[in-house]
Amino acid sequence: MSTSSTPWSQRFETGLHPVIAEFNASIGFDIALVDYDLTGSQAHAKMLAKVGIISAAEGQQLVEGLEKIRQEYRQGAFTPGVDEEDVHFAVERRLTELLGPLGKKLHTGRSRNDQVGTDIRLYLRSQIQTLRTLLKDFQTALLAHAADHVETLIPGYTHLQRAQPLS
Image 1: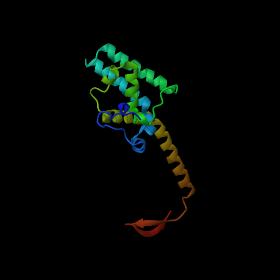
Image 2: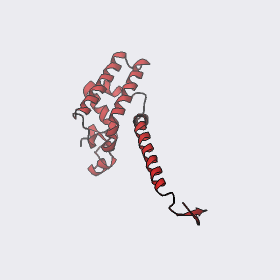
Image 3: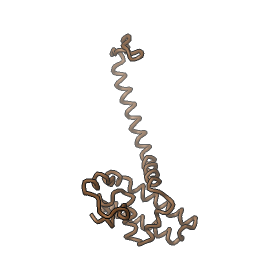
Image 4: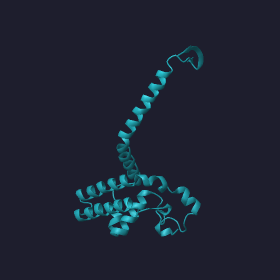
C-alpha cells in the first residue's frame, strides 16, 4: 500500500501494517452509504457555489463529477477497497482523479464527522418507510401470538420476585 494514497499519508513516514489497515478500514460496511454520501456532497458543492466560496462553474463541475462517480458505482466500475479506508476518502480520491485539484475543494467547510452524520441521516430517512412496515408486521405477529396464548399461564412478577400466575 503506498502511503501517498492514504488519508494519513502526510503525517507518517511509513504505511500502516496491512493487518492494522484492514482493521482500521470501514469501507467494507460504509460503502452502503455511497449514494447518500454523493447526494450530500452534491448539495454541499451547490452550497459552496451559492455562497461564493467556489465559482458556479466549479460547483457544476463538482456536481457532475459526483454524478459520474455514482454512475460508475452503479455499473460496478467504482469499487473502493481497504486502501481507501472509508467511503468519504474513496469518493474524494476518485473526484480528484476526475477533476484534479478542484476535487479537493469539496471538503471546504465541512468535517468528516459532518459527512458521516449527514450520510447516516439521509440513509435513515430513506429507510423509515421500510422500518415502519417491518415494525407493523412485527406488532401484528406479536398480537397473533398473544391471541393464541390468552389462556396460557405464566408467572407474574412484583419487584423482581415471583407473584401470582397470570395469563
